[in-house]
Image (cartoon, rainbow, N blue to C red; front, side, top):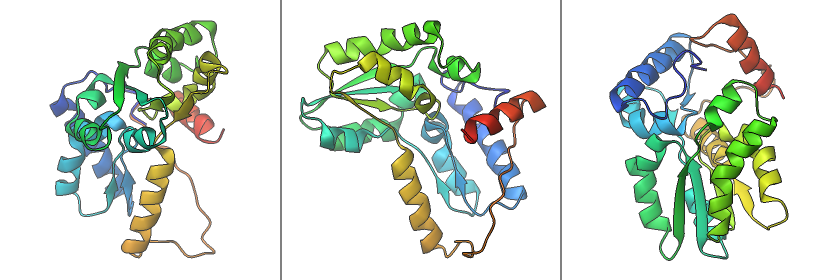
Length: 220
């Protein structure tokens, strides 16, 4: 968890690539057999470089545009993500491929990452931040909202409160990433034995207090 350099959303591509490479190198040196780049922004900026640099399976993230376009009834979908993610080649090509006949509304989640990083998910101020982004999307007819950053699912309860009873689905990329990880574990014969006892270790470029917060969020 790169609390020292977060948020990545507005950083230059080269800087994001440098930070991502350093993080993955650290994980590889610790013996990791697979890495999930659990950041849409880092995926958009650096995934090709990471795969060319390291000889292990590396899973990236992207906003869940494909399932959103498949499930929309109104033919209007909202994608909330960082500026970098929304400009990424993979995101744009996915919209072009799967968004035929669908209006895909793109919105930057201004203040979303900061709210999560500061443990302010459930404050009135954060609800106002979320409402400013979400309301205009719903008013334009969206019936599916994509949380296109791995920080944003921590705000899902707030988003759902803003949505209320307006029959709008709120989705993210978690399920797709889980399926991809499972398939690669099988493809590369990397699954642990059935009696393996998993251990969680939390690593950060920030301080010990930040690492404790990572642990608390992950174990919620």
